[in-house]
Each structure stands twice: as structure tokens, then as C-alpha cells.
Image (cartoon, rainbow, N blue to C red; front, side):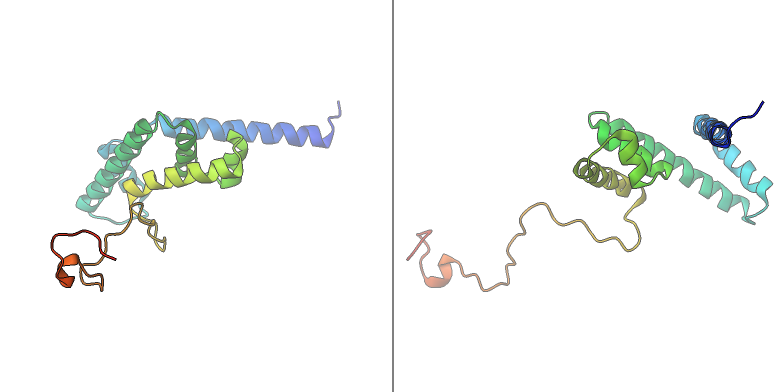
Length: 161
């Protein structure tokens, strides 16, 4: 029985992707405790850390995981930003997220901005990122050349021509 090459290739790719999806799903379901993280660090042998360093790394990982879950819960009223947030955390590219969730460029850009604010709240600003512009009007500098009514000898009026 002969199977066309394109069909065989498509079936292989489908099998590989479903296996990969299952593996990612299993990793997501596994809840990492501090003991699991410490054990994994010891078994890997790649990192020669002290037990205290391993504990601190595991604790930081746990705190970040809890903060990410808290931000996900806070976005229950904004499903588009939540989908983009999850995509960024999972390492998906922008075109993948736009295609998967059928978002326009403007929708994706706005949702990505909202998601990035949440991510920066958890992990801090990305290295080299520019600070977000202020949302409120800046207050005038008290040392500027703007003079008050008192400087002109008019204490009782608010406006003069």
C-alpha cells in the first residue's frame, strides 16, 4: 500500500504536535512544590548551588507562579487580554496569538499592552524597555516662572487682564 508523501508527512507532523501538546499539558498540570524544585536542581547537576540558593530559587519561582495566577484571575473580565497574557507567558509569537484568537492588529496591540502591564507588575519592567508615559497631567513645577496673584499685589482676585 503506497501513501502519498504529503499525506505521510502531514500525519507525522500531526502525531508530533499532539505528542508535544500532551507533554506541555502534563507540565502545566504538575504543580511544583519547593521540594520538587529543589530535587530537580539536585538531580540535574547542571547548576552547583547551595541548598539555600536552591531554596531561594524555588521560593521565587513559587511566588512568581502565584502572582501569575493572581493576574490571570484578575483578568476574568478581559478575555482577550487574558488570552494574550497566557500566550506571552507560554512563549507564543505575536502572529501565532493573532491567528489562534482571530484578532485584528489593533485588537492584538491593545490587548498586548494590557497584558504587558500585568506582566511588568509581576516580573518588573523588561531590560531596556521604556517607561510607560504618565496618564495624568503633570503638575506645574513650583520653581517655574508662573507667578501667582500675590506676586502682582492682588490677593483678592483670581483673574486680571
